[in-house]
Length: 203
Length: 203
Image (tube, rainbow over all chains, first blue to last red; front, side, top):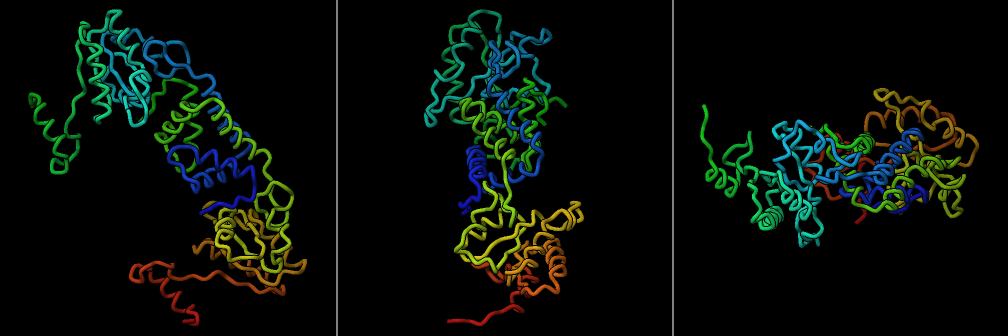
């Protein structure tokens, strides 16, 4: 246990770092001591980058992705297909899907998933605005790309019910054995799902 | 690989976080997104704590430990024994030794160890001021408490040579099998050293 700090300023900085998720007090101290070896300008750039982001961050009024303007660069890209909307939990998933280069539609960022354990209900998420996007017209397909967890399934089902009656196709990304995985190590549920959802083999 | 950021502000913040040691781009993004969920005040406290520390940090003019005044609270503590000086690499080691409650002398913080690989020579460390502390008088014993690595040994030896001729006892913290360790897993060098440096057994 490290608990005696020789300086109040040091202790404050360590306390602040230790509030970050996954950063314990020892790591916090290590990061703070590293900062002391950097120039004053570097440390100010670090602190200000975060403060500025928090102060000036914008969310796209269409898909709620983080952006610098009113509409994000994906929603404002006229080469993309606005009739396909991929529903994701957060901006990290937007970036992960964008990196695959396989999706050319638009996104809808929920800002989380329904999780009663964490006190997150449907009202905390951007579900109503998704329903409105679909109601106002030219969305043909909504793709669920949430985590394959109970919370993800619950959220999928909740949104599916909300979209019932609207003229829209609802799909979900494929679940199955990961590429590169050995079959004997795949869990039974994933393996079972990947057998049920088998696709035509193209040699 | 995550490389397309939907916002320049976001990208800046991620870049800054990713400069911290041991923080990759994925962790950096996770930390930045977490910051977006905190209040603006919390984020400002975080950024400012670090900026303020970097700007206003002081080092004790006697032992070079971090402190808020001119002399640290250890050096200015009259109940401590000023005749015993423990040489450590950094403030982390001061805190670790303080937490043992076993040392009642003063410290001398070198600010690193001699490491040609990292371009750190004796001139970059607070070695001269240690020699001066010993020269000016009432230090009876210097205890080396550096890492048990080649760099630590080199630094010990360099300082030992510098102190030669001065009327001071030089000692080094004990090396041996860690308490709680099973003997069969101890490495041979440590085990060998702990046999050579055996102490009287007090039942």
